[in-house]
Length: 373
Length: 265
Image (cartoon, rainbow over all chains, first blue to last red; front, side, top):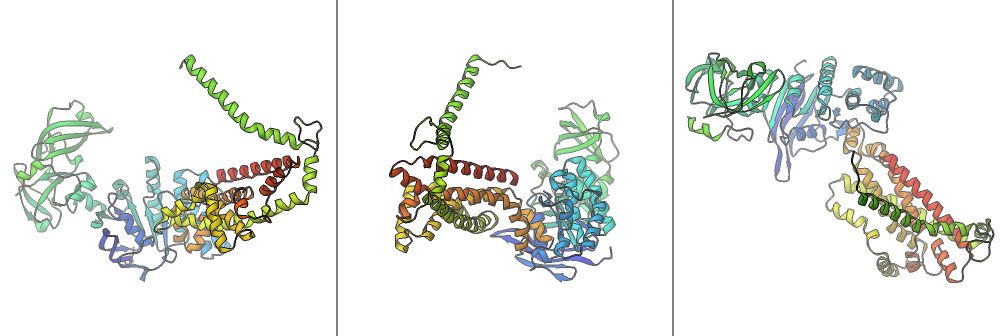
């Protein structure tokens, strides 16, 4: 990564009739960066991708790729590569013909095509599959061919639209490794679209979280995880429970806050720029059954789901609403649905976040409104 | 194990018998015609008193039949070409564009095989009379195209919906111009369906017996017209050979079309 922007997007917007699919947004992608657009369906991530690649034309705004304004160009002239969810391999062509398709159009010599196909198939671990047809390959293999096809002609940017969406879990994890390795070895600039945050966490240098046609926040995966920008990001990205806050004062330049909540006053980490209404975000794994000298949430156990090493507990906590905890399954084997339990979290595992009141994500229940300042 | 009631078994037996009887009734005339075509008699007689290829020889020796067959082909070929030229872009427009009213286009595209053909022929008669197309070769080509192109439209449309639009997009991102992406990917994958549709269109046009009577006039003699004439002016056993040839070639062409459609899938 040399810090140069491979892609610059300026006040780009897209309207379909009177509905805005994408509100004006700016986005910079560094050369060699793996950027993920993460969001629920209808959040505008695919629209943004289609605008970049040229399947849609923007209502307003500019897209600059490698210093060249590509906003008005046809997809063919944008020097982009794309991987689709349904692979989109040409069924009447062999693996070799698929991979060299872009090179043929660029009139590459036979020798160069041969060399490049060999290189690409080695990269995606499909050496020797040259003469197979797509229908003779498994889903994972097909997607690797699609990857090779998108990379073969060395596009300036690679776009991936939920490429692992059609694969089963085991294959998905395997493909995550393949994609990560390729990205690292080629230093390719990648924009990756997904609604799966595990994928986003595993692959990305940065994640842009999208919602209702806007980029809500953009940052490193760890930041979204440990210091979510607001209550939507916290609940969408890490399934965090949101606890009501009576009062708070930012301390240490905004890194921490002195919070009054759950009948207690304590210091805990805070995301930056908290002002106005706030919530305490606590991830399910931070909640345990043993007191840890932090906060305690007393509630009624509504449901338990065993995931293996962990068990999910769903509780109704008065004044908070539904709270989800993930606890070691051995230690929670005796719990019965309907019994009263107490969940605990250390103060340092809580994060104070700004509350988004236009939330259509899991909203705190009506009960907590009485406690709001 | 599931035990079947006697009534169920009876129902299955009755059903099977019914199918055999119906299929038999449908195929019986075919079998009779095939047998008659292999008769060496000079008059109709069933069963034939002698066997041979007399009727086929008669057919080939009679310049009228040969002329009628070649005239039917002469009309069918441009009708098929026109059908493909109209139907393939139409199916692309219906399934791959944002053209307003493409639903209507789809409906209108198959109207000619939905509307009762005699009513349609009357309407065509009026139009053709106005433009002086009655009794002309090109008039018949146009009429047959109207009848034949829905088959191409239906078959290519069905195939097109199974070709993901992403293939075209993938080709374009890889650097292909839109025409090149269409030709190299979409049309290439559509080819079996286009051929299948063309064969169906050919059979439809070749076999067309209604329009020719309304629009053809006395000088335009296609094969169905000649068959009709020969039956009207006394029965020539050679028409059994014609019928046999027609049935066999039609089944062969339909089989080809089916195979092509399967392969395109």
